[in-house]
Image 1 (spheres, rainbow, N blue to C red):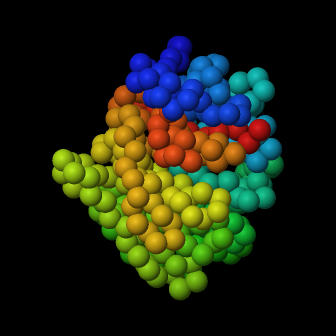
Image 2 (tube, rainbow, N blue to C red):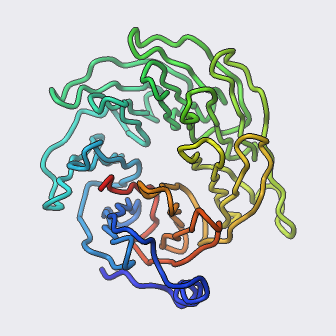
Length: 325
């Protein structure tokens, strides 16, 4: 399978002074429908390799040293480990049933996995490749976020409509916060002060104060010409300085740019069809979106919040992560 820059991407690239970020990183994209991971050079937009993986790959992340990719092979009930040097599967981790999303601890030693079918969060010791704990949560767990100090993990349950705050030492739920319908993602601010939880059907992002565990603000979205039900927030990313946030809006085919201090929506960036997840390049000059229905990813320049290129990947791209070096 070969990647390509779309004509629109080339035109945008020329309009904004060339295509691609200034520094070379590798983006890894999980393709839910064709059971592959696409490796993309973020400088050239070229597809470096297409890796065959397990069934229905969704959640994807990378070890802090960039050596290994961790991938939820949801229909195989496992997490596959991919060597980033060889692009080969070199092992697996015991994920629990139907892993969908996960988050890596700040020290890189544990994975916290949402098991959608069994209403559990599974805690995995990566080095020993065994399960440390299983935490019962609400119905259809998906979103996973972890505080910068590693002490608190947040899981969202799609049917229960809650954000569950879990102590990572005791593996016990300490707080349950009601949010809007079908929460899909949880993202801590870099200073740990807030957790942003997207609600796909509710059409909002709830900003939860991490000290009081109360919703302090709700961000809503309005796009001229689109029905409200077409605006479905999913992936959320916040810049390292805590000043700007990006929210993928699903079938609205746009990424919202938000002032993370005032919570004001500043802009809507048009990308591909059914934008799902987001990832920054390590230098934070670019954010990448996965666009499931159009089978591509879009590069957005953070300085201007303009799209610069589009790259065709596999079928139904779901998640994306970028190498740290």
